[in-house]
Length: 162
Image (cartoon, rainbow, N blue to C red):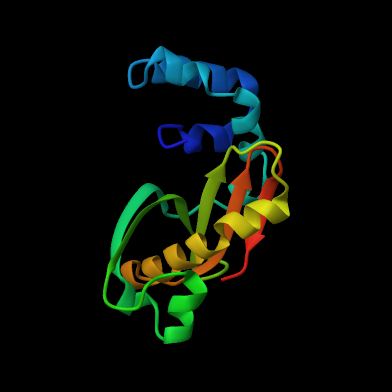
């Protein structure tokens, strides 16, 4: 998804465009990586309400490094997130962050390709990670992260409470 042209998909979200995009990506990816791209999954994202909201600033594969003491404020939160107390570093990469002017803030999206995993299980597995990512990006970006989602190519949008 990092190399996918979202601007083209906004104009014309269809399988033919996605297949031509796969051909364009041959110069940047291996044939094996290209074979793993399922056009139906990309189309599912491109026609989602979440994708339709992506009209502002977009960051793909945005890295961060944050001190735990900057994003966790109490001993209870260290326990909640399963992190040892003390000043350590957390690093990660957000799949997608976009600015939504109706929220006056950012939306954080994490893509998941897990199959045979229910939306509730995905939420349990990844919500703490996304909550930490949101806190880190609150400090990095000029506006707060207002919403978080898992975008499951199996189930679609799964909101995460932050």
